[in-house]
Image (cartoon, rainbow, N blue to C red; front, top):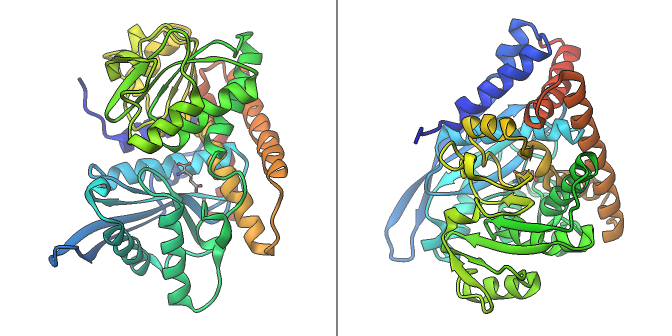
Length: 415
Ligand code: GLU
């Protein structure tokens, strides 16, 4: 199988969109690269008394529309290029959702699953000490991503406020509610994805109350299982997988019990009233809607010909390779691209920044209502671009995002 450099993939996507938009050479050159990059080392005293040096990154891809915005990942396979790619996607994602934000991303190369809470806290605080000068409510606002969570954000915010000697909760989002977080943030990525599925089903005439499979059962996957049924009035979750295995039930899995099982045992495997299946087989099941909610490149030319879903909703960042994308498009499978499907998280992050600024917090129902309005509008912009440019949803979403960022760059006189 081809091995992918995600950053090269994003650059190709930017080029394709730029061509459709007839952008000039300087604008294209500007949009192909991160505006600013930071890479640093973080020494951490480990529980066994040794000191380990971790490598960290923060990339500010583009800030023409507002402060850089995007998560921080803790992952053993992180590289400068994976962060560049993810920072690029955040730029188009915030633009597709029409938020007054730019795009950024950060990461640390580490094995979070084998680290203690104390070690993770030291790493999180060390990360902030390395970037404190370059982040801030008006500069760059991080959030959680793979293997980071509201507790990570709490440590990071505390370290930032310790350094700057003032309360600035809006420096990071997806914080715990008690210290400046917002209602509705934890479920926002999945909620946004389900809203995008609802709009795609409306446009394509597909009944959303059908068979669903979810690949990846972290925060986004778990919430998608619960919310798909709640928001779309039904649907059968027939299969779910995580990094340890996959489970299947033709009758449908009980989403609530499955989430409890995952939280108590650490995995979906061994869930009662289900049969184990291979993780790879989950992607090829006869379902109507497939939510990839794990890592990059899960759907490739190896399995794309065998995928049977009618709609794929990319809750993960970059789960489909470019070759797979072409195959799925040829086969008439509708892929709701990550920069639209997973935009709910950053949308509610933006609501959190707004609430932190005036220190007055919204009811959960208001967050849900505003998220729905924002993502419905974003879905319609992408549908309109599909028609106008006669192209598939990923390129259409890129066209919407790239056009908005290019316009901001032009208005500022950058190009
Ligand atoms: N990590 C999430 C994403 O990839 C959220 C980013 C944010 O809220 O800033 O969209």
